Image (cartoon, rainbow, N blue to C red; front, side, top):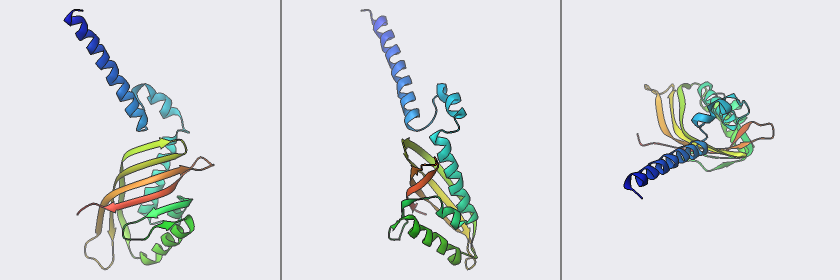
Amino acid sequence: MKLSTISSFLFVFLTLATVVLFTNTAFAQGRPCSGDAGRIASNQDSPRKGIDDFNRAFIDTCRSMNHEAAAQLWADGGVDLLPGMEPMVGKPEISRWLLGLGEKMKCAKVLQCDVDWRDVRVAGEMAYEWGINSQTVSVPDRAEPAKNKGKITLILRKQTDGSWKLALESWNSSPQ
């Protein structure tokens, strides 16, 4: 075979390999490929839409300090792994802790609460996501608001009604 024919075959192979790799990577990360954009965007029952809805509710409860609504985001057997605390296992224990925050933080005000989700993956009835979270909270006995930035991981479980609930939460602060 001539060198130019081998080069042509190699070019075609590398081009196809790149397309296949991009398509598989985008699919595995829950992102639509260019050819899937219309189909996924128009499907209101897609897993990603449900997770996006959950994430909006997750942030809204943080910003509004609505601890009752935050408790409703948990699956019955959920586990919360907060820094500096023993694991909280089960929705009743997590709910008690969340509702107790209301009294402890009644004069505090959340000024900012965001998560920059870096990766969301769905595998059937389970999903996991991780991101960088940040909060700014005004506390009465402090001159400056308290700021925190860290990493967060959530594992979500799809419920029989189609909603997504927290099965596990873990986060920690980044070095300041």
